[in-house]
Image (cartoon, rainbow, N blue to C red):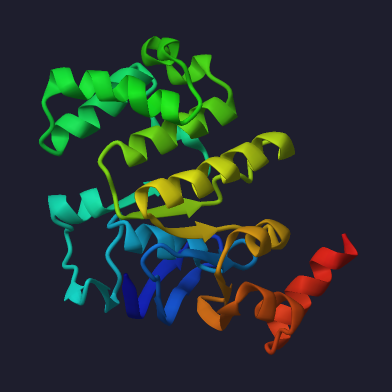
Length: 248
């Protein structure tokens, strides 16, 4: 996947002005790569995630996959190719429906047979560390970590090529964070996934990601291999970001 010159602005009622949330942003995500996107809250990371997943349309720029430009609204095939996992997993499920029905329906929506989809739903839940009993559970009956595992199961149920993970560990306990990260690493290897991992946790990103993008005020200010960016930063903001973490 490649993003070219992405640009989007919003009116902020709080700031009472137009905010340039993403400003001429370009980057690429290699096949089978873990790419980290870091920066302080409000810098535009989640906006990038929503543009790439087709939830919002940019004012300008292009998104390409295998050299072909995505057009908005995204086609069914592109939604199948790119799946997004959110920070608050419980909110991403319909509270009136069981987890099993949500995962089954997404497979049917992309052309799957319903009976086969029900069987596969159990397999996906088990693969993400949840038992068969979770098929009949509702989101409110599950912990945050369990909901995040279910969200991952739903995402991989359509056999995507790309996962966009937007702060998916930030609301979880440290021990659960480690389990979710390990699961992502395993799925990446098994399925050949490319992963855009958005986080404010520099230590986590360093251990997980091949490359890092640093974002500040809607702009990518630095990018490179994880070790290079974190141990030999070139941009003043990156240096400030790293030093603030070290002081905590």
